[in-house]
Length: 263
Image 1 (cartoon, rainbow, N blue to C red):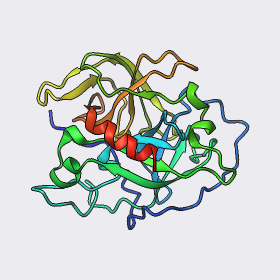
Image 2 (tube, helix red, strand yellow; image 1 turned 90 degrees about the horizontal axis):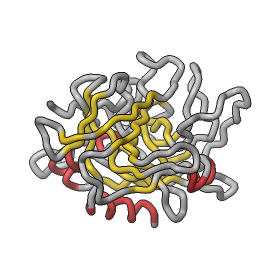
Image 3 (cartoon, rainbow, N blue to C red; image 1 turned 60 degrees about the vertical axis):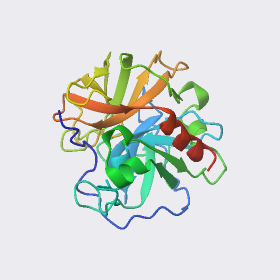
Image 4 (cartoon, rainbow, N blue to C red; image 1 turned 30 degrees about the vertical axis):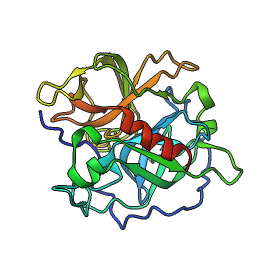
């Protein structure tokens, strides 16, 4: 199958802005139920639902994982691309963990992206097996880290750089509002395997992963609160809402993560 992306909402457009920006404090909504996946949320571009992303365990608590095509144009023939896959500029990026509600609330705040880290195999050659990215986010105005805000080490999955292709995983994503007006995450627990058409990619079959779910974490060994599991990849694409693929994390992914974690 082709790895057609499931990322950006067409509502998001603008000039890419990756410089440091301040944390935006939002009102906590007391009536919003606790999310079963507080580390997972919506990656916003210019304030609009763009993709899905997840907090990853890190020393400073400031790292988010998502798909490369969500944050950097796809390159070709050794040359960088200019726009996102849907022809739009990517825009100013921020992350809303535990995003929810018909109006799109930010119960755990809206966290601004300071820097992105993407493999040049994606930005120059558009290789599907490099369709992952790690983002460094700003602390809030009180100096609190994003990871602390979502529940600390008990909620953020630990990255796994040496996973095999056959794992039991929980995948969590946020479809865009056309298929998900309440902005609720969809999840599926299933077993991964090699993709038939691209054996170097992971594959799952789970319904409901529409546009907007690109970047969704694929977490092995998740055991619920306090047992966040191990992140082995993020959703890259798929031909339908049922068929989804991911690039398996490896040593190159680890190098990007370490740059983000120390940024």
